[in-house]
Image 1: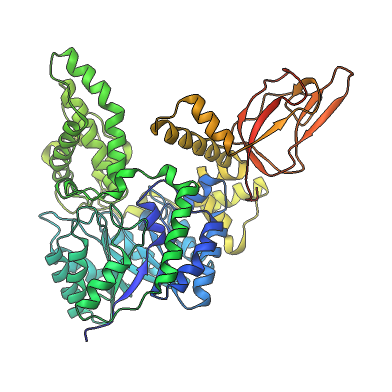
Image 2: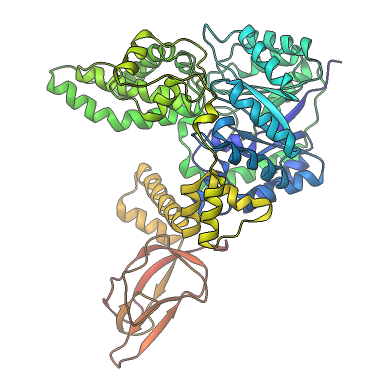
Amino acid sequence: MKKEIKFSLVYRDMWQSSGKYQPRVDQLVRIAPLIIEMGCFARIETNGGAFEQVNLLYGENPNEAVRAFTKPFHEVGILTHMLDRGLNGLRMYPVPADVRRLMYKVKHAQGVDITRIFCGLNEVRNIIPSIHYALEAGMVPQATLCITFSPVHTVEYYAVIADQLIEAGALEICLKDMAGIGRPEMLGRLTKTIKEKHPEVIIQYHGHSGPGLSMASILEVCENGADIIDVAMEPLSWGKVHPDLISVQAMLKDAGFQVPEINMKAYMKARAMTQEFIDDFLGYFIDSTNKHTSSLLLKCGLPGGMMGSMMADLKGVHSGINMILKSKNKPELSIDDLLVMLFDEVEYVWPKLGYPPLVTPFSQYVKNIALMNVMSLIKGEERWMMIDNHTWDMILGKSGRLPGSLAPEIIALAKEKGYEFTDEDPQKNYPDQLEEYRKEMIENGWEFGPDDEELFELAMHDRQYRDYKSGIAKKRFETDLQRAKDVTLAKQGFSEEEVKRLKRAKAEPITAMEKGRIIWEIDVESPSMPPEVGHKYEPNDVFCYIATPWNTYDRVMANFSGRIIEVCANQGALVNKGDTLAYIERCEETA
């Protein structure tokens, strides 16, 4: 019998790689016991990159979500892990050192055991401070190698980085194959190289399924000493996400490895509940193409999650590009034509930018430049006309050293613009800011929360946190969800009137009890506009007033918890007894 292989369920990344949003805290609390009951997981990925922003976008508190989701796993001895972006912390751009340091203190206090620290450039200067911060806070630092396929990303290249990270205190190494384009044979050799030199270090493999190599890669890393494999579960496994637990277990078991058994009754329940979350609202933000694998991803090297973004970009510029071509008496292009052009341009751009591993945020930078170049070339202009400031920061060295060399034309363009290159520690470009945020918390009278967790949220996601505190975030999400529902129905071929009927069928009408004029406002003295779609009412809220002909104001109560889906009467409109004023869809969640 071969060695034992353990499994980690990447429940956060399953959603992150599929769509825009994560399950709400009430859903996470419901799924956790079923994940435990499956009995096959040594670890669960509970939070990390984008998880907290998503909660803030809901208008809800991410700290409460992390605490609630990690708690049941801790009670049964399952380790929890998170994903962080090194210099960028939990966001897309660099974070001051004092905020990074606080993050590990907060997350450990909230119940997270392991932090998977990565840098999109594999820049050790960005990763090593986080290793030290994690150890200081009592967390297990899992240092990460971002895997890609290029002339510079060799076994030797990665092995040197692994040595440095382990020497700095990393207790584990993650092979993060974010696009799934790592070649199985190379991944096997890399695993063996690290294990032979550092047999005590745990190696965890994280591979996406996009181009279809992940199962072969899993087998190779296990044969060469890997300890833990990241897996997903239906209905979010495969496609651009990760291999399914059942298939991975069967493959490794047949190969002679010791693998845990799966409680299939619990798996089916967890599978059904995950589908329930999709049907509830999360599916409205999942691109259907994310369920497909695509060998085209091997050509461009971009992560599978970028496919949806690329397709949206291409659809957005498609008509404009064809208008340009038509004006030049040139044949129009299909979406597939543009996709191939974009892939070709990524292949052209990537080496000239120094082969940054194509992972957040650098995959976005490379894709954006390629798209802008395609636009410029179609217009008959030069390449490199539109490069944003964040991308320039990467080019100039403010994010760290690039793995490869910049093309002479890029260096010349930077000098032409008067930009200066730097090789100093990237963190020095981003001075401490925690005291500024502390002052803002005090001025606003906001609670700092246990272990300064609320201070941390403001410092890490200042704009989203302010929107959360003001209530704007929740209102924006409700509007976003309603729009997504309407778009989905429209794509299914329903007319506007049919969409209205379908929405009304799931809602309840609020009717006028008397004849009179409607006043949409809590305060009768200062009438306002009708409530917006998505506005929530609780049972004891006044829905509106009816100004009767005999000079009385009759209150119309909401009587149940629900959200507006349609307003049928304008401010001041004359309504008769029994007329429908609006439709409200019931909801059970608390405000």
